[in-house]
Image (cartoon, rainbow, N blue to C red; front, side, top):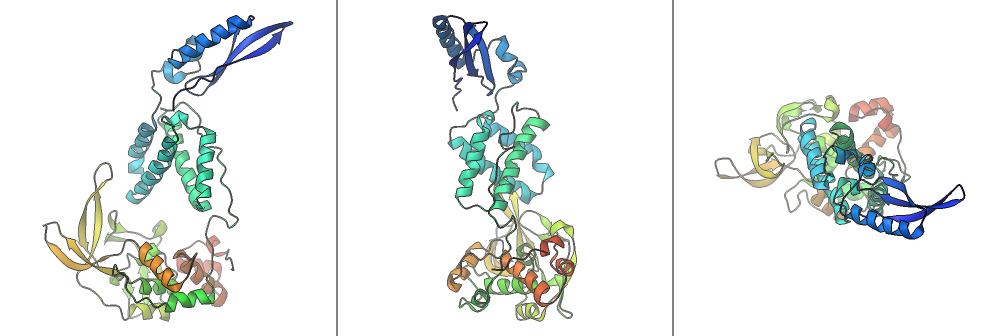
Length: 396
């Protein structure tokens, strides 16, 4: 955004005389008011002279006192420089998955600001920050997503201002107001009997065009209340089929998208006794021998450059053809990483709208508490939740 000092003339009365003062903004956004003259014509000439100097970035000693970044020789930080500094410096503090998600959010949101003409970090004003989140809100983003985005943007500015001290301005996202949707941050939605029937008995077949067993996955999640992130890395060695027990625990050798090794949320292991309905989902499923999981390989800029295929024992798999490290191709079964397309297809065939996979977990939580008589603490222990998460159930 081109620097605009916004010079204007205003008057003040002192001791019965009219004084002409100038009001302008420095390159860092600081507002300055200075006396010019008691003669209007002379004041106008001085204003035009000062404005021309400001537009050439020529600042006098009075201005420089209010511009510490210029005194220290620091250049105004470009948006691309600021975001790159934040992402590269904080990369080792986060898991690969968190860093990749942070990169996506930071790049996307700052790009939207750049498209509005803001080239430097200091060009982003509190008004621009609020307008950005108003636009995101109008697109229908959830309250939880907006708060996550707001937290991420604030972290970037706090890092540049307080930690590495390369930005000499205030955090424009500090006072951004996120509108409340009325349902709270967490989605707490129960399915009706008709919706449950539609999901369980939809004429779809067990496999989508991508050979993903979405039908079995949906039933397993519905009858265990597990997270999608727990169902996809599920391996046959995790289950005691003789006793119907699922042990959810850290697995150092399990290949995931981001690294070799998987752990449950908060690293909290738990043992799940499978209900008959969940056991019936697993019992007829075949155990495939040639099963692999890929670990994504990225360069220093976190750009995807390849995959490393490692053997695994995944339960829910898709038929695939992979290229091994020696260049040979192999027909096998691989881990499922994305359920969006088969899930949307399943909803389309079931003629359902506004249903999310995580609603199945909420549904099972409701069954444990309202139909099976478990306390919120007991249900939370089974599901891997805290007791507080299980206390609020919304009926449709």
